Image 1 (cartoon, one colour):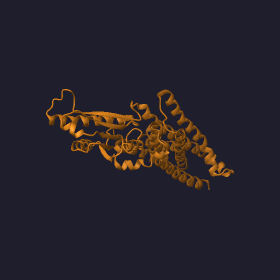
Image 2: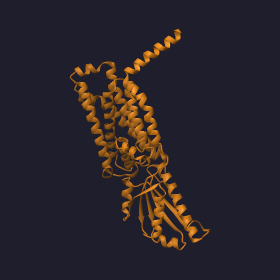
Image 3: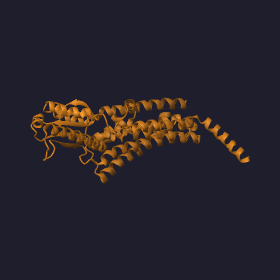
Image 4: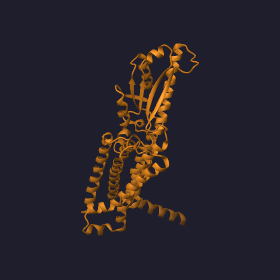
Length: 375
């Protein structure tokens, strides 16, 4: 009986403690449901809604039937029709399409006469896993169409199929996973380092009781924030660029674009990450809560909802809208464009503008809350 009374007493005490700590209780109840939601919808290895462009140099019934086979497969969405060859580079550089189907002239005449014909598919290789999957889809569709042509022509096709595929992978011809992983790792490391370190450093002042002394000092809130965040900004920037340097040395990572644009993009992304950490620090009262919120707001979105591992186009529509507020989504587009494609600011300015807007909003919210606490 004594043991049971002790257990009941400790249980009551712990329940009272949990009831007082509403934030921790909310996190414990919210995190499992959030994990189920994110993993259940975002973890999707089936790549669909692949943006496809077509350059039809034949304009025949056969070429339209081939294009229809791509669309009817359920994997591809026809988003662009190319009339000039220079459009291919622009569409792939901006990420408007992930694959371009090029149908040669006299395609329909060759197929009708039983002659061998080749179609070309150009694939964006900045995401090696997606490119490999897309190539598998394309090969399957072309093989199926070729078998249909052979059956219609009543040919045994001893010399091979009537229709063959000539794939071209741009930006990453060898489909090396390193070139796909490094940009994501840069975003992941930068976000996690900046958010967690900034959130914990400010909350640590609250727990130590030194925040009141700082408020009474001549140091204003702006000077305090700048002084607090500058070291973490420098550390995070050096860490991110260190990943690039090591990847160049060990894995032959190319930097085809401007170094100035690369460093500037990383710095802009870090400003938003530091602002996120500051906002968390104004909400959390303990390092434990700050750490949990920082992980929840940086780790999962960067890993799951940025297009790092799983293509955004394959996610449900409502989850695609959620990704529009994830900074890493835009940052990854910029990184892959600068590192692998060698594009300039005229191509990625929209993503940079989105990063700037998100950083400005987070900084404003952080400043408002910090000033209220400072007053």
